[in-house]
Structures are given as structure tokens and as C-alpha cells.
Image (cartoon, rainbow, N blue to C red; front, side, top):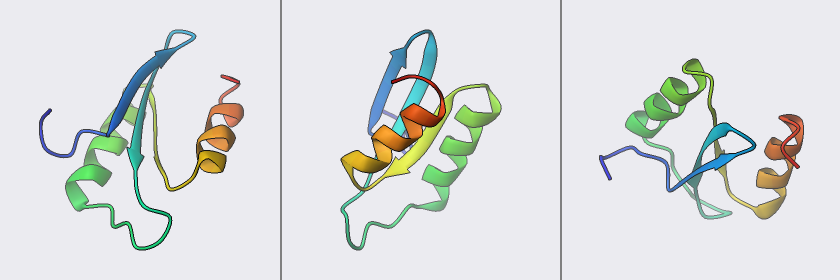
Length: 66
């Protein structure tokens, strides 16, 4: 994958999702990763940084995907 691409790419209920996975403590999001997340969001996809399963559940729930 090209540098900065989120770790997990998926399609759920027709929505493109990019998830950048970080450790619960100390995970740093690079400027390139932030840019890729913003590009996905600007294109109508869902992209976010997750450091726990709870974050993933919350984000997907907020978008009515679970």
C-alpha cells in the first residue's frame, strides 16, 4: 500500500471505510496519515484513527453502520 494509507480498508453497507490503527498509548498519527484520512472524508468515505475496539464501535455507530 502507498505510504499513509489507513491500516484497514473496508466497504460496509456501501460506504468506504479507512481505519488507521494505533496503540492505546503512544500511537502517533503522521501528517501524511492525517492527509489521507481527510481525503477519504472529503470524498464521502468514513475514515478515522482507532486505538481501541470501543472507538471503532462508536465511529461505526455514529454513521449508522452497526
